Length: 148
Image 1: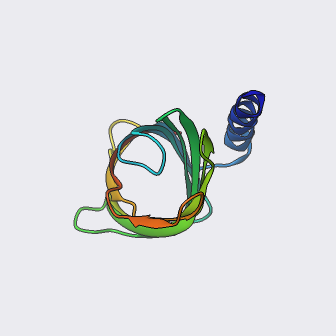
Image 2: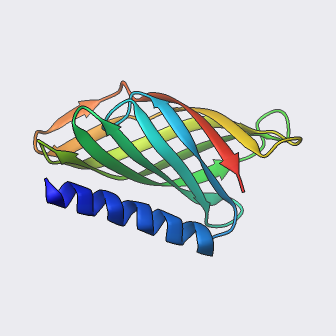
């Protein structure tokens, strides 16, 4: 049980450290079916004009999970502030069962001009390799993030 607290604390410290070093960040919440649980702290760290790290720290089902995806932005789609993106990366779930796998992502997001807010919808199919091996396609979510 102590390793969970340690990993959770380490994840929070790393997230805080990253936010002090990286420009173009967003921080918010993701609701929906995820690799672990239905609610996650959602963060975006810009890697340049057309790529970013999209990370989640999720809680639920007596587990803590981390998704870390590299997204490629394709903009604009229609209005200037509406973007679409695709990405992929690993995920890990810690709890009664250990989970390790890969997750993909396809999504749409809108950035408001008047307020520092981004909203988005995404779909995340996941392939779990460890503890069991399976493939799920139920990972739909809604993102609401504050833009720094």
